[in-house]
Length: 153
Image 1: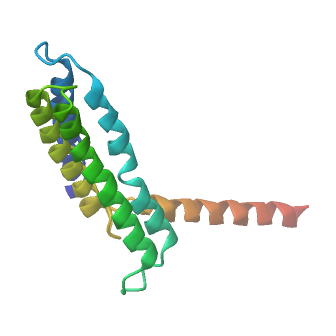
Image 2 (image 1 turned 60 degrees about the vertical axis):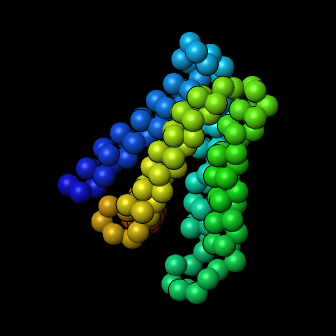
């Protein structure tokens, strides 16, 4: 039940963050849609960490170069997401009020992404890696079924 509550609260956080982003774009006072480029940063930010989790061996407790590179790239993406609205506001592409709304949305959305990895990133019952175990189980079932079929022939 804790997994469902966490998923609902993370969904709510993502919706609130996107609401702030949309308010920074669509309010009649601001009416500029340049901050929507931040959606690319929201999509790109978890990718390096997900790739490194897939590549590295979790049994090694020491620091890993692949993991460190993924954290470095993720940090660069997150800082760029915070810097882009400020650059837009300094260049007078968007208003400072829109910049404040977009930065508030950034805080909420990146907090939600961090919360997702804290809640579902560990190897417990509510982990997203349970699907990987399920896939391995189904693969082994399929292999044994195919083996039994070929034995009958």
